[in-house]
Amino acid sequence: MVKQNKTKTFTTEAWYKITDTIANAFHLEAMELARYRENKTAKLIAAIPFIAGCRQPLRTAVAHVAVYQLARREAKDIFLHDIDDDASIMDRLFEGSSFNGGDERIIKHGMNLLALQMIRGYAKDWSDDIMHMKYNPLVHRSWNFEAEEESLIKEIRAIDCPEMDAVMSLNDVDGYWDAG
Image (cartoon, rainbow, N blue to C red; front, side):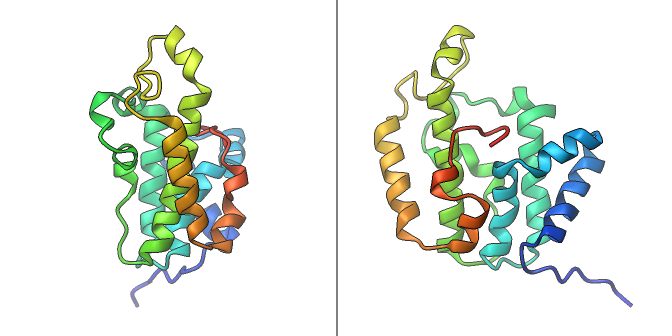
């Protein structure tokens, strides 16, 4: 008998399966795993393929959360923003944006929430990035924060998705990419 993964909805069990897999793969300690489970950005990344009704949502969620983990820790130097990422805000999220089917409007809603979280993080980090000579597209005027934020908020509001709002609503987007 072939075992199939039939998880199609984003449940607490699915989130725990994803975070357990990430914890095992990246050797997270119990306290790190507990903090990870509270990370709204990671949880949103994991939830998008489920809420959008993608095929193989668990597989996609684990892949995207693994990229997120690599980008925030193990391969942070490789994933740091540089001038080549400036063409579009969504270019910066490319590595976590492949979905197998699903409702494109819901995927866009989730990706826009992630983009808003990201640019608010750049705005929050403005002074520190200048002090540490870290590339920041807002500091370098590659992106206009006010215009991008306004556009993203408008697009997020245009698509009603209470299931995603339960994971991360517009009011939850605080710019804390790593722990938000």
